[in-house]
Length: 187
Image (cartoon, rainbow, N blue to C red; front, side):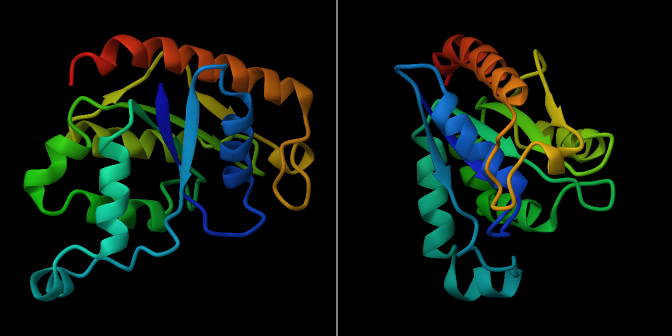
């Protein structure tokens, strides 16, 4: 089974990108996580889309997501909600609207996130639910990974160093893969 992972942070030492890299290391044998970058995706502009079409970086990410069994989103929480860079990417990925079914329709999605604050990414993850519903995904509600006080669990360069959190991440991935297996046959 192949999953695609997307971090909602562009920062080099991002704890959410580090969480995604740890997930790629800890995914059970026989499964893989391809980490996609949002760095090349421009700000959504309907005039640009009308004039030039969907940018190549967006088309490539759409094709990557469509070719996998599930989507793993590692979302920061900015101002009690979702990060703009990740929402912008999903806005582009849903263009043209005729592609929504191919890219997102019935696709299993898991949300996880890490925050230096005390509530993890509870509000950020909750903010994603209407968006994921609108896109027709199959969000996994069997487990949510919301890591609080992440500054003590990650190194300065964003690497997950806490063994207990690594074990929780491993269990989270096992649960998502178990959910994704039956879902993959529905698309």
